[in-house]
Amino acid sequence: MLAEELKHHKLPLNTVILALPRGGVPVGFAIAQALHLSLDVVVARKLGVPWQPELAMGAIAGEALALDQPLIRDLRIPRQDVDAVVARESAELERREKLYRGARRAPVVRGRTAVLVDDGLATGSTMLAAARYVRSLLPVSLRIAVPVGSRQACQLVESEGDECICLAKPLPFAAVGQWYEDFRQVSDAEVTNQLELSHRQAV
Image (tube, rainbow, N blue to C red; front, side, top):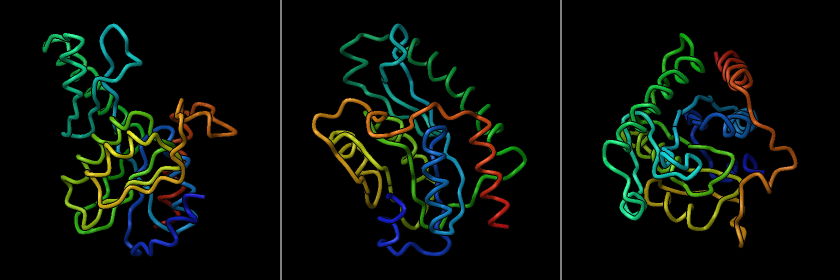
């Protein structure tokens, strides 16, 4: 459905689909296949509150860091604890970059249209960091595309891209997984295989 919507946006032939692993890769793969565009990844990592890792206090992607400063202040998280989480997730980010891309170089984004894709937006913090990172690579246009998202998350990321395309913004919004018939966890092997297949088709 997202691919069908993007067809109406008349994307240039050199557009690159950049998916957020792991869940965004099957979505990005389907879009890249339907629109005959190249696919790659932008690895972004959630920065979890030290004593409650599932609660995001920000996210990191490349050199871009997005911190929820009001939350950090409210929870009185010490700066050294924030720095420790950033360091740990930066190392994991680098590991995943090497795992997913292998010997392939990162795509050239400068001067191209980039479409950032994920399986959905809950808080939007991870997409926000990813968008800031991709924007630093100087694309001619940056679009964010997701099948479903909370209204708050979409509003958060809209200012970072030229357009935020979200098929559904349900109220109330509980979780991304509620809007999928199959929301099994995507494995590293699936990500690697879909990237490799997309790369071979593009060559």
